[in-house]
Image (cartoon, rainbow, N blue to C red; front, side, top):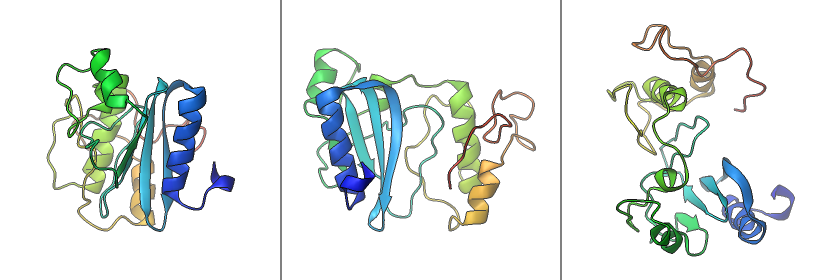
Length: 187
């Protein structure tokens, strides 16, 4: 993708074209970013995908799961989706109450509420936005949050090293953000 595009939005569109044509073997998440902003690209396997621009001044915590739960499919400036995504979701009854303006891609094409993933989302959001008090047992967490302070390199390193020490999940949660068997991390 990268050698063929000049912007993050073009990257989203090109990957979308490939998935429209060839499909995807599994659910996955890819980020595209440039000076104009960052995009979260989620694929739900087969030919279903959606990408949303991360709002300026916000962040999203990812942890091995689809996360986009409140997408406005009518916002063509900040959202790009596979053709017929909403109609396919309705036709196949993948959501109990589908909405074009609050589309829950993660619920339709992923699995919500796994503590293995959600505990890490909770921990990362606690580090980046400590003023926000959230339960450790939510099925989903907000897609995009505003950090309490500017996100710095040292804050990202702190988050990437995080375990649950000093939190209510210490000794309970099965997988921290920092784990000794992690193959790679990117900042």
